[in-house]
Image (cartoon, rainbow, N blue to C red):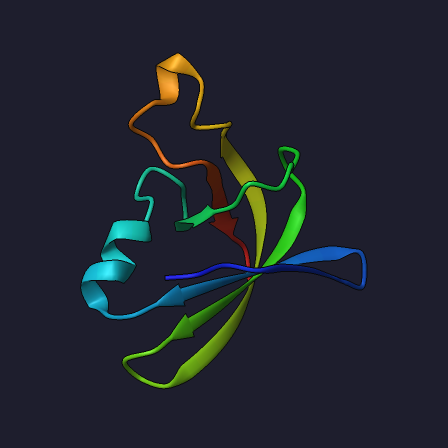
Length: 95
């Protein structure tokens, strides 16, 4: 799984490579309604920031651009209270 970031029309584009259904389930965030994905990133983001998540479904050879908003931020994993959590953001899917 990899992720990259680029700017597009003032929205950040995050690429999320999903290798299979198990990987997709691992990134799904059920507490974000109507749906959300965890996107690993070490770049700074702000809550409610609009982003585009380019979801690459490798098993199906499909790329799905999805509009979303930053809903949740897990900061730098090096802090003592985040030792076992990946750094990244939770994105609420809005389109």
